[in-house]
Image (cartoon, rainbow, N blue to C red; front, top):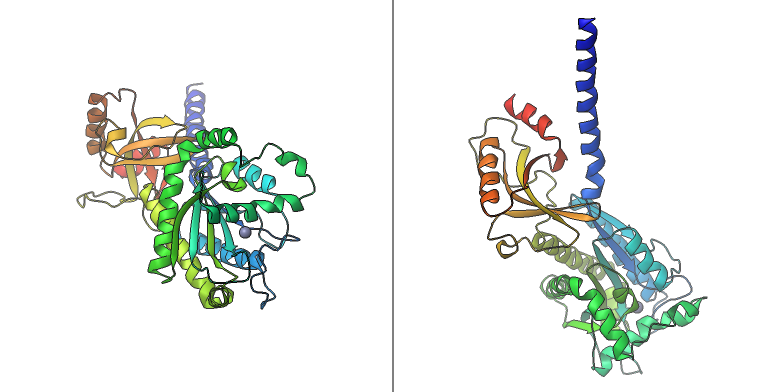
Length: 371
Ligand SMILES: [Zn+2]
């Protein structure tokens, strides 16, 4: 009878350990940062035809650069998931694109387009990156009119009845809804335009604000990139060339990488965080952190947001963001940091463990650590 009980206890422990492991693994996909890439236009909506010297139009260049960007991110950045609004020559509606982004719980939305100058002059050239906002600039309004005009090509134009970028009331409502994401959108837009200049030696026309449908209805940081003008002969040649597409892709990639770094999201393929304690004898791929807060809001990991605590990192888990203080392989050290966090007012904080960037049960980490 006694052995029976012992056996029962042992199997209970085994089940417990197993379920810890399962929950650790099932957590990993949701920890990943999700980027949705939106190649503009597609299918029967070709976008701007440019000068007409090429068979390919805006939709083709947008798709090529989008797919190349997604591939580069997948290959080089860890903890990032890529989804597309389209990955072939099809025609998703603007509403369909934004709904997909919201449904997929996307963290960042990047729409890729090419520009066109009205009339026959073909003198305008350079890149522009847009975030949501009002503009009184006539040229910018033209761009918005063109990119939103696809609505007229859609079968069910009824759904866009409320979308009136001329109404100041409507715009105010949009801006309020987007306020939480705007600073992040601007940050990325700035990085993109900088990289176009640094890597591509392109002419940047700057970061601009405008009422684009896909920016207005995506509830996350979002930007719309105009790679260049297809109505400008030289720029059209560049954007149709393999070299040109590579340069634009690499610039966008660098900007995304900078943005993730700014958010303190670890995209390193090899280790989770830098180890500044070389004395640790046990498995160096185990890291302890103090979880101090969880929120649906994205907060910058700056000391002023966390009662002066430094070395804050953030992780997205499902719909919420978890905030951690410290990162060390030493359990003793993390106990000290936990006490320090409590002193600052984070009294319900607790220690969590990561192995190779994935959250694992604390018990498992301690087992490995003491081995
Ligand atoms: Zn476009």
